[in-house]
Length: 181
Image (cartoon, helix red, strand yellow):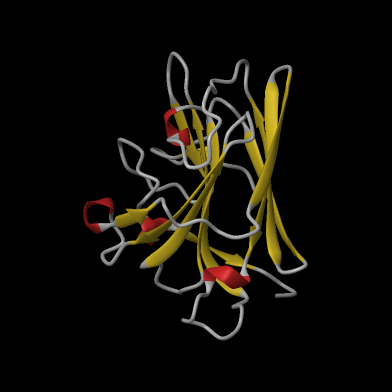
């Protein structure tokens, strides 16, 4: 999957590819992006990673993503995760719980000349809580990239088409089919 400019849907200046697959009950998400220089200083779990370069995955097991989960990894391998309640599918009424931590979440990053890549391993069963008995094959999802620099760039798999870019426009999440779940 190629990410597009989050504001316009056009091709971004910095290309980013995303691959996703399920293995042993976890969603594996790999990001590969061009980048002439990464911006990353944050190293603690649940730091405000979105203020620097970051890859993000948003997932909801519900057809209407009024509850979804946010996962982030930066070039240093720091992780952020949160549970988001969004009753109206917009930022103005959402509630974010960054104290929520997904058991088993892991991620790693690699920075090379002119690019960086990362992999997130997201266990799926804990995302259901007591709400669903089995893992659905179809999830609402979106994948994002924030690139900080002289001119910030925001890209997405299913662009929210807002200016400024707003990744928490849950109504714009795409549909991700997970065969084998």
